[in-house]
Length: 232
Image (cartoon, rainbow, N blue to C red):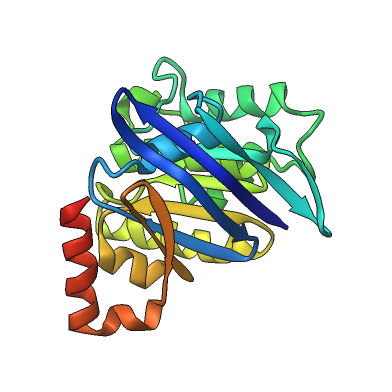
């Protein structure tokens, strides 16, 4: 499976954020979308998720060399700041999500099995979400996206503010599920991209460029990338 980006363009007034972007993402990989703050990473995700209108171009899913339109069920989107219904407990939220998606969830599990999968402690499962830490809310947001089993999982800097333990748990989870998915993780942290991602894609001057990951171990090449980001 592939996600094809076809000459996608998006501007805000006179500022061109995405400039005729052409790129192909493939399943089985975690892509690190690397760019400075404000480079357009979230804009790119919001276009894919149909939260933003764009001026021209588009994108499609390609399976067995047959292209089809991207549909909402294809996309899972984990925001950097988790949005959850804080008036519900973790279990109530999970049960509600399972109930309204029961006709489309493949091989559903019990709520406790899902909590175990995400390493959410028994004592936390019946707490109100408003009392969850940022990392716990992020886990819940990630969980419901994984249950939906999207073809494309967009992660908008979801690990940046997590503690070390939760961050490592999330990294391992992503490595384990990448086999049949396209995972795109946006970040401005080069070392995180190197540690987790199979391929590095640089968003610079409104364009996407695949970077040879091996070169990023060179101080000279790192400096070149940093300078490009500063000039954006």
